[in-house]
Length: 130
Image (cartoon, rainbow, N blue to C red):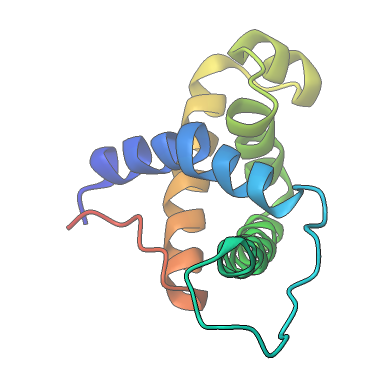
């Protein structure tokens, strides 16, 4: 496993995919899909149905991401969430948990690797670079 590349991919995942997934999963409820006896056309109801499917898929993937984070040890979880989800600076995390910058870097690196490994085992989201 290329650990540095995997850590970068995890960082990119939280910066891009996770934010999109969260927005879609928490989107307002869409209007219902009707199955009237109307002519078959590519209509607005099909578009709404497609969005509903994407929303449910995003909700399921988000649950898996949250579960993968919960599998980390306490300090790895804090560092990963604070750095990648809450976008805190290293000095803020250092103050919060009482470790120095070197230890924060080690915890962050380990958290990213463990998160990627867990997520790959439980979902089709593979962030591991070989």
